[in-house]
Image (cartoon, rainbow, N blue to C red; front, side):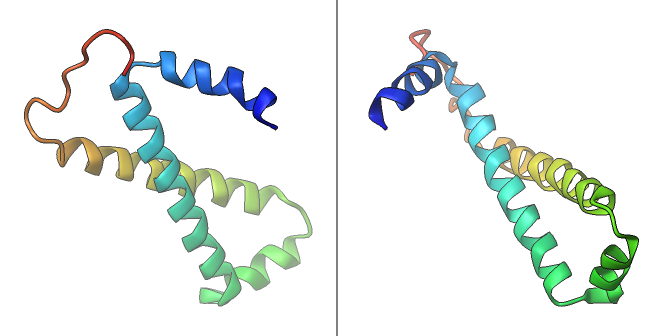
Length: 96
């Protein structure tokens, strides 16, 4: 398994520090959004699960998942950027 992850790890380390910072926070936001979407569907809030299951296709789930990913991912990235201290955005040029 380590052999397959080495190129990904090497690529990840070549990214600038701020890009890695944004990608990690975006992934955290997407995970949170999808967790929230799962909770909404599991609890059948506002008959959401019933509406989706009666549709009979995957389109509503895909649209909801994309919307929640964009919304929560962007919110997490924005919150992370606004929470940065002055001087945290310095990049020493070696990708670390």
